Image: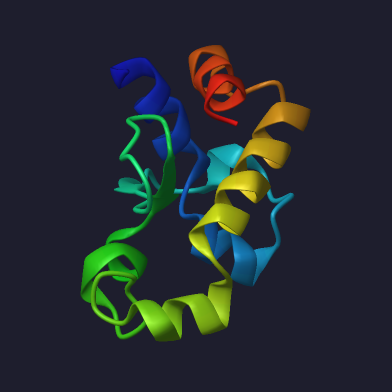
Amino acid sequence: MRQEYNALSSFGCVACRSNDGFWEALADRPPANIHHIQGGKRKWWYVIPLCPDHHQHGEEAIHRNKKKFRAVYGDERELFIKVRNVMTVAGLWPEKIETEYQRGL
């Protein structure tokens, strides 16, 4: 699980990427925190990478103002799919997460 979280963290903040363009080089992003998507059963693999400002500390942080975060960046499930798609094309999507994702459908 640590290896998978490190890969997602290396992707950088999905909200920042939404602002700057998803196809920017992966290496240009600072590591992000892991945000667990709520809803139904909590799954270790159902996560998105968010920087501290978008995760907990900023005005649009998901843990401070979920309604505003969703209005600006979209639903967490949509962001999960965006991260999955971009990382898959780049050949960086963790296989273990994909296996769990396919099982969880």
